[in-house]
Amino acid sequence: MTHKAGFVNIIGNPNVGKSTLSNHLIGERLSIITSKAQTTRHRIFGIVNTDDYQIIFSDTPGVLKPKYKLQVSMLHFSKSALSDADILLYITDTVESPDKNDEFLQLVKRTKVPVLLAINKIDLIDQQKLEELVDYWKNELPNAEIFPLSALHDFNIRNLYDRIVELLPVSPPYFDKDALTDKPERFFVSEIIREKILLNYQKEIPYSVEVEVEEYKEGPTRNDIRCIIHVARDSQKGIIIGHQGKALKKLGIDARHEIETFLGKKVFLELYVKVSKDWRDKDNFLKNFGYEQ
Image (cartoon, rainbow, N blue to C red; front, side, top):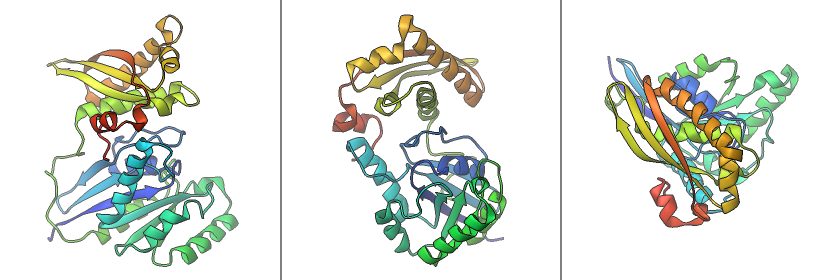
């Protein structure tokens, strides 16, 4: 039987459920998930392999109008997904305004590859409103195939997945057949810590933080990991650490448990907080943290 392979690039506005859907399609929890916008900052490949095909799902940051250089890089990740896709998976939901970020939608309209439009969170509206939304998108993206679904409740995702397999081009695999992602373990360690920061801290703090894995020592039964939590201002350091270090200790415990589950082994985790002033607008920091310029 002929082998198929291709890149399925997942795009859309912030907070529509791209990462939740991506994890469902991949069958692994690769992208961190919170209710906060801008949770995903990088472009992350999740690879699904069978004997007959290889799907490279590419989760991307939510499309937004940049306020600082970090967000310029995030938008670059999203726009690059338009140019190298074999299949474009555009995610919207039943909550956001359909015409939000029309400028990016115009780029989607010009793509030459198959477009699958997933309307997520259909459990939040009634049938009549869903039909109206489907009609809207049929008019807005007439070449797209529409899949109403609920990523949270795993509804209609299988039909979407099967259609992706049908649309895959004939190709040899792009990655080794045992590959799950293009990112190393230390990347996911930093992402897990950042997810816990998003969940444990409020307001601007999570958006002002970057996690750097400074040391990663693998042992037969335990990994020793030391990470630096970079913050943009002096005042944020005290908030991350908390009174008598309690907030940082809780963060470390929560992150360590999750990292141990992800790696399948014990972890000794050290966390330090460092002020890297205005790192979100400084090229040297952004390059070091893996953001394209």
